[in-house]
Length: 386
Image (tube, rainbow, N blue to C red; front, side):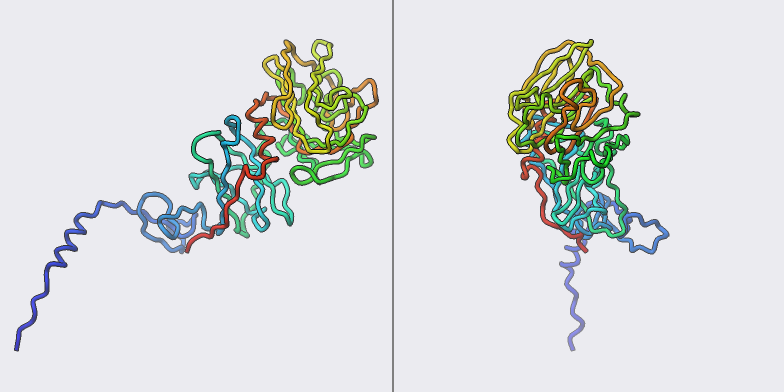
């Protein structure tokens, strides 16, 4: 009878050589839930110490408690220049959020502040604070995570706008100030403008007779801008009529005001300095029943008017704007000494007031993100891998 066959040794040698050739690899303990401690009953796995591993080692997922996400890309080359700390408008499709939304930077770690503006059957409109949007180089990407029914709502206008503006008013059902500075707008019931469809959610329809919104008298000193300011609004008016200097956002005749230019069809920027009145008038028509983004900017001894994201006119003025005791009002000029209160007849939305001077890059981006629906693109839904 033949003896036992000798076991081939070639394959064993090959395995030994392959194992010896492997690089040294440090491992760490990674929990199956993001906040598990050593005492938790959560399953622990060994994973290479090269960052978070969720399911497939090639996929990075911010937090498994949020089972769905979508990629958001910004078409940044549309911009005329970079912007920093920018409140980006993101329009999400139905079924995404709103209470459990988390916006995460490309690093899959940094949480970006956000404020939900409007949520209805058509989707959710959100303002997201972006640290930096260049206008060249790689395409900026962020992610929205959702689907966590137990998540708390972290929507915060103060986190998005608080250090940028004195007040921000979306003018929807609530007239609160989104900056967290509590400059809530108000008016007596019969003088309060009705809600209407705005550029983002709801705006307000002013009747030109007595409709207006006032910021608190106790807060008026917060708007005593002397050396710099930016005031912007989205406006819509079919025919400006004959009311001179029809008011949009004003702090009276003896300080600053955004209005229509006298009886012309352009926007106007009025100021008083040393008791002397100065009115800068724009040339771009704003009375064609379309929404227009209008802004007045003052700084470095220059007054500028922007319409639809583009500088309309500029003037060099060596001055310091006077202050007064009048409150800021929307749709009227409380201090007007002639022609009544110059009530606005038309729609207003997204009023923003800042003590800072914002540049042309910012003005273009503010307008473009609303008017170009392709500027911010939302990817398809992804689901956390097993």
